[in-house]
Image 1 (tube, rainbow, N blue to C red):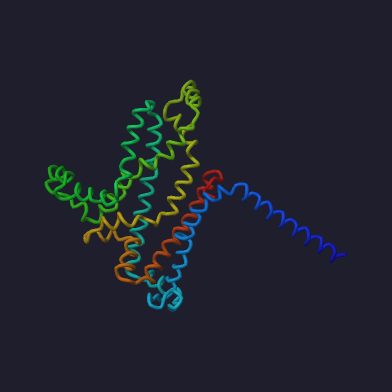
Image 2: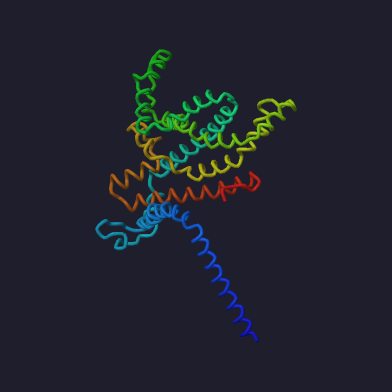
Length: 321
């Protein structure tokens, strides 16, 4: 009797599996054109994102380009221990953390404020001109932006001409370590805040104008309308953007930090990304630099999961996943 029931259950599962496979094949044949459109993105992601992840194994090996990845000796956590015990670890890690943390705290609210301000502009022509003015810096190359910073903040630049007229001496903005972090963050806000506000502007465009009209009739002022109508509309987007930004808090752009570095501001400008470049490509210690980069990625994943859990608790269960 038991054998008969087991046979029936096995037959039922097999039929269910065949039905499921048949259904999937029918769906694929029905929507094959959509799958074909999706295929290039999947292939590129596989080639340039997933396959290179295999190379991260050199972080656990004494890698030699002659022996290759498979032929190199396995050393385990040796390179991670070396980095954690390095006298530069505290400075590099804290520089990266401070630059990212302060950048997130000061730059995150700016696109939201810009979007709320743009939403109050009723004349379409004026609004488009303001948006063009705000979005334009995003299309300036990082190299050009850093070049502009060196020109404007040089000892003979326009900023220092004003400072010299007031204080009698120029300020070494690009040489003094204490100025590096704020120059980096403020220039990031200038170049990216306008472009980052697009997503909030698009969300606010879906707000029903009748809500604002009703609030006006009830005597609500501008601040009250923003607080009770506009902000609740963009709150889910704010949560997702904040989680993604916090998850990448240790992933600062290498190019700008490296270009802004001088021999004088290294105590503040040396971050993990520039350290990996110098150790890996300039010194040729590929295994050690891979370990440092992998350590940075692990910290980012931990931060992403942690921040997502916190935001979900504070945002009524709504998070990234």
